[in-house]
Length: 504
Image (cartoon, rainbow, N blue to C red; front, side, top):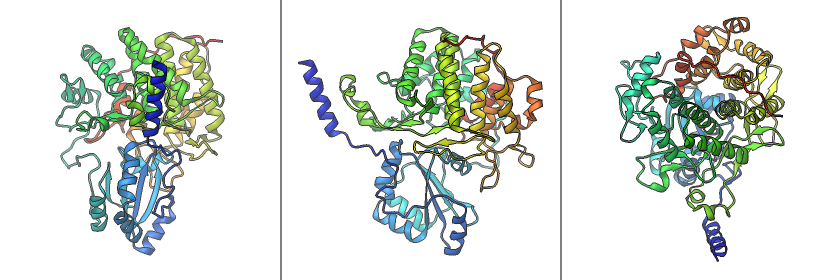
């Protein structure tokens, strides 16, 4: 009887479940979307029309809503087609553009004039009437973070300043970093790398269990495993408070965090989080045959609201089967942190398979390409995060295997040396880009963390200048602590872990 009831409930749930689009927008769009290319600026000058850049991800609930409710509204379509050159950009495949124009979350819109000057930008779901009015009036800058910089704002550039700011925003009643400080109120996005730094600070030892348990309560999926994208405790609609997409890079960061938490505290509940996270990656985002990680699983609030017995009889949300070098490197690095914490050689072997698959799919003569779409071929060369995170993964793998050589690390480091831009004073985010060069703090922070674990002679031989990297570790108001967390951690690193022998 119980089985029949469960199947009936599952059938009713499936009938009421809205279909998720596996094909990327803009299938069926009324807007004549263009792909981003430098020639569009020439067209913008000729037609006296600015570019409307829309960054999206189909895995994101808010993007799909924004598209359906606002972008495709007849009034908005009319203004866009008449007064703008609309450009559709996949956030993941062109993450370099997303960060270049100050993207923090999705959906993200940037309005550029023909000289590539930003005339407006905003993050989030803007209603159709407001959007049409903004477009018609061609307003100037719209806040991305909710707080614009002023000349008096000072960045944080030391570990001490970083920790002091976090101490100010720590809310003991909520067990979150959600308060306000002179530096500004933090975003609602989770900060797993920041938690990893705090985990190794004696002054935070008593606070960390509460913060960790709250992160699991807010974002953990106790049924399917893994972590959701974000949770907004201030959202009045409980069905909208949790963004239920699951991202490989974020799940990797949480796997790393809870692996370290288990190593530090030895609490079985943290081990359980690690094991559920590993199961989630293996079952949903890992292709064992091709030895590669997929990038994300779509949000589906309806699916995740169902009880376990019903959910198990529903098809899970679809997965974006694109592979990215940086996110894959993070996932492999997290496997190795878990291998250390659990003393599990099988995870070292899994990491080795993933490293070999990453080299097979995305390694080229000049370094790693950024992306391998499901339909191929690999694309976007000269992207620094696509070099740094595989390098970190190879570094941690070598540290887990006594006697392993450093050939691959040396090759990656030598390639990174070519990214140095003396005029910027750091390692540029892209080489061979159609845009003016720029530096991203998040990438510099990860590079600083890696360099801190290497012998000085190895870094020197590769032609890398750590001082250039450290000079870029500056957290400005409105930015996420996670942007610079690994860099500040590099200044206070713990000793490396003992080696673990891979399983056969």
